[in-house]
Length: 526
Image (cartoon, rainbow, N blue to C red; front, side, top):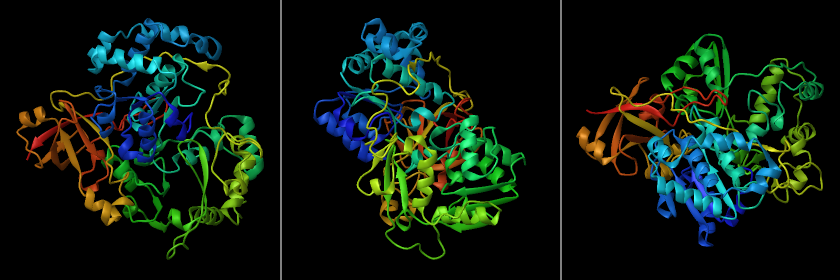
């Protein structure tokens, strides 16, 4: 997030898209409600009528996968009405003219044809967002999990810069991370192209710094992303895999392909706290420790580094992840893995990571600190880009709308989009072991518009067959106007009716994220 979770309360307008915030980030949603109580306008733009739409001042329903078109359309309206922040554009940005020319191609009438959003509603959204003194954008995986995910994010950045909604409280572009400590994992180099804090592996100076610290020669080439690893395993190019705290046999698209890939490995090790669907395929399963059984730090979605403290000793043979990794490294000939505590590991992190340099356990004992924090007397950074962007000027990027990789046709006439529900979390590794949460929602469902249900002669709670080009599942139908005609929705938590049997593994060409949010399916009465 460019901004902080608490300062959402200071926004005058909050635009939420690609995020079912009340169900998946309820504590952040509470800040949205507090902002609304003090008069902030709420715009929700979602293909499915989520709970938050009931509280919105304006709810727009777009066709799945058409986000670039409506964002360009909003910018077209803002520029044509003269609502842009000319001073911010002139003094803080570059490349505006290219975007100005590009969005001329997206008048409201054309956007309505592409997205289904009525032109008058789009005009109203643009007016509220642009005229509010402080406007914040919240988004999640409904924006990123597309073959156009990078373009979607760039478009939202264009919109924020166009209106000067960067570098001040109650504004910004704020992605909501999908799992606890995802921000921390990325900060620590849990990506194939960077070391800690996004220091590129292709940067010779960065590489040299880590080589000297670790006493090894490091590769200069970028590694494989998740789906590239699965493809490599399926092709026999990748021989072994160590999966820690992840359940790709339920969370990744085209599960049949994932299963084939994992079974084709010569060796698979999984470390987790429950025997997940993925762990059941492993040659070796290592017992991990839960958050309550270990010390360390988490970094939240708003860049806030916080301490966690062990409440109980690890149960049975389980160990904290850092101990297992160090022991595994030593067994395979690794040097320098003689850490005695998470605090020692963190001290190395701060030594090698400029944006974490001023953070220490002693400081975190008092309160969380938001990076960048570059010295011991630096209080941290509540919001980014206050006076200038990290690179100097913010760059506008002209973006064209592209259709999703797979569209409905005669054989598969419906568009499937996926997501989460309030009472289950991700692949259910934790929540489906909670009797209380399981009693609230214990099985999957498919939401179908009443007009589609009537055409298909499907009744509420009837079990139906859903098929795509990759596989099929059986699942109960919920007949509801939450989804538009031609669109269906399935939560992906449930192995018995796994939505990701159906989803498409087509990738965004830049971020290499699969298109989990749009694919073509058919629904059949059994």
